[in-house]
Image 1: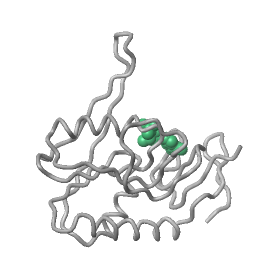
Image 2: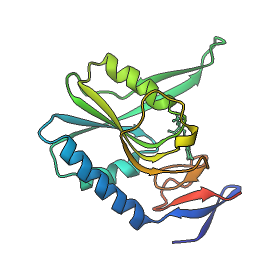
Image 3: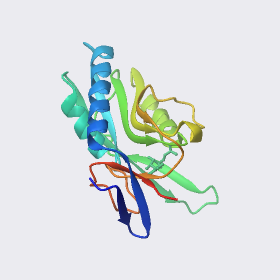
Image 4: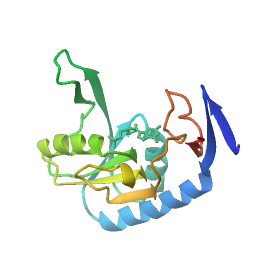
Amino acid sequence: MKPEIRLIDKTFSLYLAEDKIMARIAALAKELQQDYLGREVIFLSVLNGAFMFTSDLMKSLDMNLEISFIKLASYQGTKTSGVVRELIGLNKDIKDKHVIIVEDIVDTGTTVDKLMELMESHGAKSIEVCTLLFKESAFAGQKIPKYVGFEIPNKFVVGYGLDYDEAGRNIKELYQLKE
Ligand code: 5GP
């Protein structure tokens, strides 16, 4: 475990070690198991960033569940309205199921709000958000995540699935941008 890493043109300092992340995930799993006991649950993992968190969280859960993966594609439209986002990969029927959106990080909350809208239109019975990281001070969304691994300051982090220009996703720990 390195105290500092260099990715592309930036230096990052160790922020959360693997054992801390794992211990927190175990606690989150326990909470989810209790809350969703006996219910039909589908976890919707938001790609790409949440892949590592999803894997460790799912392995920690001792309950019947379904997993699906989704991705929000954003592209510049030809109109002046700007960025258009659409959902790709929602191939499971979520109607009347309890949906738990699994995110790596909730920052402004825009992504989650967009997903909420889409899930509601697909007839989910309930929707909650489980995120490893929450930048509460940057949050300006509607849906407050119910299950939060760590509340973190508004500073850029990488590792454990999160990237800096596609670098660093495979790192086991979380690192914070060094200013
Ligand atoms: P939102 O602002 O919609 O809540 O978050 C949008 C996306 O911004 C997140 O899913 C994540 O991909 C990215 N993001 C926000 N903060 C960070 C960060 O500190 N590090 C990385 N790697 N991505 C971030």
